[in-house]
Image (cartoon, rainbow, N blue to C red; front, top):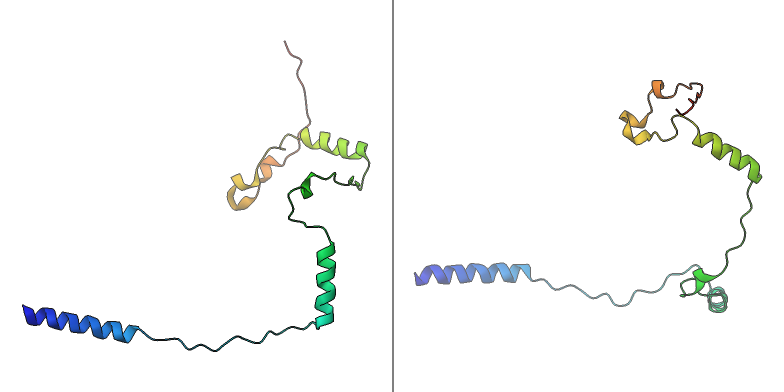
Length: 116
């Protein structure tokens, strides 16, 4: 029994010795840059004087007014037409291969019934 324990301990120590390998240290790598010192210094000055985009209050500023490519009446008319389409709430992902079948694309005249 003692010999089996000695053999097991020897096998484990051989495995540990084989697995432990030291890495070589190659020192600090030389920095490689396409920019000269003057270019980097100029970029640093610009960055230091510009505002911080990660500051806490950056998003609290008033955003500039957006300009629309079309006038308000045209966009409203398009929105109303889209809302009144009979198939406007179909989701392409609900169908095979993400394609809405042809029978759902048939445009039928909109008829309204009077409420009783």
